[in-house]
Image 1 (cartoon, helix red, strand yellow):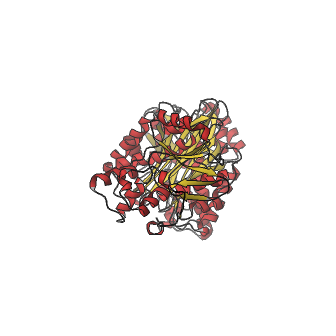
Image 2 (cartoon, rainbow over the protein chains, first blue to last red):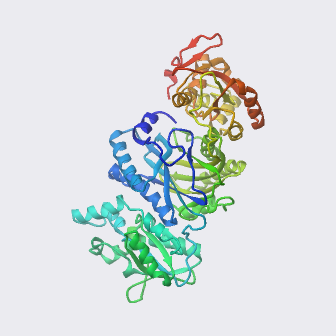
Length: 319
Length: 319
């Protein structure tokens, strides 16, 4: 739909020539041509102010994050990114917002060699909805359903910083300026683990990206694989900043953090070297933090193997 | 992101088994496998309350319309629909809304044999964003850029009823109950012209769907084809209800209506029989209503060939 100078907006900020797509922005549809034998991987994430980002976020970071969280889903499937479409609802066509938003968006797109092939802009409450397209050889997608008892559980990067930043914004925690900037960056400018996802094809038996928090997202893998799991709380990788916080808050941030956009994946113990090689090739740290179990329970244990009650400390920080 | 029972919601209303997609709802990505030699057509439309639908719309009709406006873009490319993803932002998880919304959405999806393969739900201001996928043989898409001077301009169905309904809602027009219901249905429950789009492959030289109004949408074809056009105002197909209205209001509804979701397309005069055969096969009326011209101007003329000022009468009804 038209008003608010939609077409001018598209032209100014979002109309870049298609290089790989058969047809990009500017017709009724974009046209994509997957390579022969390739499946198309598709994912869609919608970001709403106050829920997925705060009104204080810099537009450049919002542009980055809106695409990053979608690319993270491709990473979790082991897909190579190709293109995306953007639907944007904006209170008003505001260059001070759109120019840096587009800059952040396209910087990340260019980093991965992908292009914007279409979308929609409209007036309305701020809402950013991106659908991403990737490709992968038929049958090679990393799914949530392949975890088997005895497999190792791994995570990439570090967990919990994004949640810690949110707790600072909420007034539940305080941090010195530089530490706050570090965790705020984790929240506002996540890095999708695309190279790791690609490198894990044929190595990992299941994978998911951590967007809702480890306990919740591991729960999806458990349900879809028909398995339980044990997580070693003390093994979960965390930043020096998070380590300065109370045990209760660390636990919340690590187990129920949300917005980590790291990969959680499983692999047989026999493939530990292969996992480490994949991580090394992808230049990202990976940490073994648990084991897939028979049954359907999630147990979180401390360094001495004692059961940690995952519910403890959650209520105060419930989102 | 989780809260508001997102996963329960998805399961209850939106999780139906994938039949054609390699992987549907429930993993990080959906997986699609276009047939060999086929291009994938992709389009994305976002619907915002107060701009694309009124708060008074029945949820069943909103579910229908959200998918219909997207399918209309596939129709305008001559693509066969395959699948879609849905991102939904909702003030609250409300069964009284979601059950009929899903019913309207899936009734239209089933009519065209397509499936929901993924998406996102979140709490936030009501916003419905759908991305649709279709396929068509490489190189056969109907584009906006193929109109040439001398080609006929055609439209499908009837124009202007949706805008007339909007003017009634705005208090700028009045209609008896049954007439209002008829035009309200045109606004709230449009019919995507998919069969016509398919039948026009190899016949039409350009096509676009009318979502923003004839003058605006024809303008896209003109710009992308590098042509002008003459439209015969009196030839534009309209309902008996619209004919009861003032000439000024008819003109606004026909030329700047918006929300018609009919196809506007061009074809050489030598293909008139082929156009009529395509329309007959698709069981939809088509009307020849103008001519593609050299230059870059749009002229709207009356039955006597006199220039009608397209601007006249627009201001009062400006959206």
